[in-house]
Image (cartoon, rainbow, N blue to C red; front, top):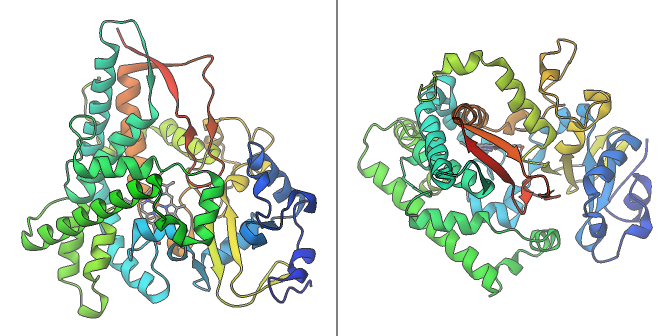
Length: 433
Ligand code: HEM
């Protein structure tokens, strides 16, 4: 067994790492966060059997984990804490809600919120998803007008409709982003377009105060955060004072919280932090469920480009991971993207978009090899919402419109953070005659 007693020189030389001449004393392996980063990571994960080191700001070692057995060990134990509350961006965005909660506090919040996301509750959201799909379709049909087809940048419009849907199902709030934008819609737009360079992202992770410095960038972002948290505060107060029995998640949450014993209740701050978080036929859940190939398309999409590329954890005591002793306080990154591109799991056609692979009864995929929504105790509470929303929108759009690629158009995937296409995606869109 190899011994690593602290994050010092021993660590640096014992665990396999990337070639040292690619590492700078200040920025670590930052220079590798380039276009080939994904490919390099996939290659290294294979080469080093699912665990190796990468150095970030001030050479701090991060262990990159792709071995499914290690993934299971890490995601199922509270000894490996989420780091969202340590990360300046996440804490600003999610406050004291479930995303950042740890240990017993996490268990309490999760127990209270799980019932809101049951199949029965999520089923009630389908009409809102379908309505969102129709709004998007109508908006695009307007843009096409009398033309045969129109080149449309789809990315920001899809984010806007998604925001509208979250507003309605989350807290009965009309963002109305495709029409006249509400104050909150504008605030979210600024926060969503906060597209920092990888270096800035790593920098603020290490030195959170950088986020407070008076750059134009920071000022606009911080103002938007203030607006969002003020409005979510008002929404919670409004829902508490006027307990209309709504179907939105915030109404259900306030209602559930009222009848929960005091020691298990969510505090006011915790409540505020959860807030954010034939062609015209309206398909039902049963009908959507029968579309098996649509399910395959959803799974293959989030396999090949997992929206969350990495899950972060930190060790709270010394641990043994495979043959390595990893000291308390070490940062771990489960690379979802590398696991989803491992040919040993998915076969030689791993780089191809093949939805039918999900129909293959030979494909044995455990929860720790397919991780678009994480796994274990922090498994995404909204995975059913995301999956049904994706399918509902797609059903409406592909029944009404035809999509074609714009040949000369190129885009890249953001290598870190949420996987977003940069600068977005343009498509030729036309109506069905
Ligand atoms: C495509 C869409 C989505 C993706 C890819 C996604 C991904 C994830 C992942 C990977 C995690 C695990 C984080 C960790 O282990 O540290 C997570 C947690 C979480 N997600 Fe999602 N998510 C999505 C949509 C949603 C939606 C629609 C909601 C709410 C309605 C939601 C609410 C949450 C919450 C509250 C957590 C924290 C759960 C906990 O700590 O117990 N997510 N998500």
